[in-house]
Image (cartoon, rainbow, N blue to C red; front, top):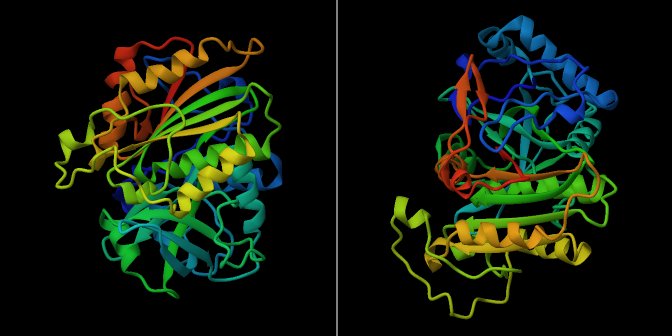
Length: 383
């Protein structure tokens, strides 16, 4: 199992256990039911995939604290790997809204095989890296944006850079937002969260805030890296606290409902859902619209905004589920997935919290409104 530490954790206590047995097949990937989930196994694929396995295997023998001690003293690494922290340089921070920016980072030292590592990871599924906050000795996972999401001002000829959509909240995120271009950021990975295989026919993503990044990764993997069938569908329900975070976004299928988020976090500004929204779009919405243009029958998005009193609720979920009931799976081994991505409270509200078991983070039982809906024929995965 590739390391999957808690989202915010003390680096010295991170369990670096993994399972590198290559006998696991993709058919065993989603052996979690609608009522419970287990940690997924991940086979290697290709030369760079074997590098992941080699690095992860070292973690078994070394142990968490030992790995952290060794990674502190290793500043010569040129290739991203799951065990040792590699120095990356912050090239730029580009605001998307007042709450989020896209960070562009590049390895400080050239000479590694990062392009191969990235390519293999993006072709495999949903993955993340861990950033270190050196003053507090804590780390947090962040999901790279797919290679198609590159600003025109960035050097597209340099394929060793990674981009991240990062909100200002939190110890590590606040630390990153305070950094200036040229600063060094230590990261390790890839950490594979979920492998996506060609037998996935449909995905319903329910995401909050920067949880849109895994959805963009999955869309890249399935629609660009694989050869999707005509029946392949990806639908995203994306919730944000402010309209500026999804400025210009237009829903494809649903209207507004009352917001769950306002029950947990009181909002001071209410926007009439009937108001005209500026036609200009922020960068993430532009990319989503481009995916709609490229895959008009395969990719759709609905937007929900807290300050407009809108909600991802049972009705909006079931409206999509019911619309797809008329389209059965093509083939006996095809799958339908509901993937939840976003803040812990968001995930818990929808599907129940993830849990720790024997030193590892696991899916935990299905709870929340998805359990209440009792949807049949779909597997649920919490990121």
